[in-house]
Image (cartoon, rainbow, N blue to C red):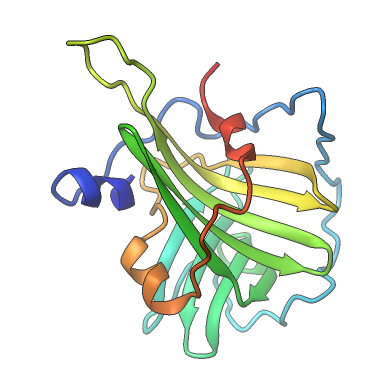
Length: 195
């Protein structure tokens, strides 16, 4: 994940882990909802782009492909920051606004960007956690990017990016274009970690 690599190594893309592309099954306390047809967003702005990914003149903050070939992008556009989700050529949902938060972990860290659409929150995340604490052995980081959808405090779904060239949350771009909060929006990104 480029954002975390910037903190601990020279800039470069890091290959995605094997979990990318798999929707993470929910734990017993949460309801997983995968709608059969997309619902129109309640407060989403009308799509202003014929593309889901960021266009020329926009600053990419996050971008990846999901296992169902849909794209997810967070772009700093002239009219503000936008969350875009849909096919490559036609976003199904565009939400303006957002705020971001980040935290460091031993051997990694996490960044989250939250967007609200009525009582539903879309929390985009990039996460790297250490999986091996044995002295003298490698860190073996687990890297994941995706989005968590919550409504009324309950997790509806956890979607993991399936993209070897995903653009994880870009810390500098997020800091330049989004208000920052002190704490992460959810701890449910642990569902993306390997068992």
